[in-house]
Image (tube, helix red, strand yellow):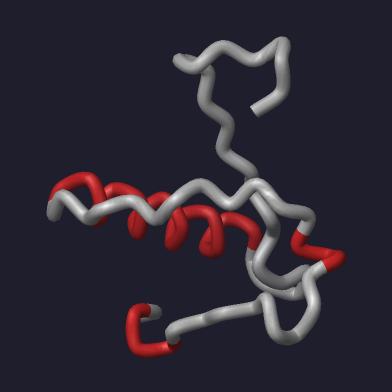
Amino acid sequence: MANNELERDKRVEFHYPDFVANPYLAFVCMLNAGLKGIEENYSLPEPFEKDAYHLSPGEINIDCDKIG
């Protein structure tokens, strides 16, 4: 966390899923997924504070069973 950020400050990054997708439908799907997580009390993953662009293949760990 940067020195000028307070512990109570939070940030959400929005990365558009696909540039050929309908922006309204894509946003509604992401919003619905977030609301479902709130309603069903999903646990949050640990914060990711690395630059994903510079990760090596060995550092990328995606558990596909937990997705979807």
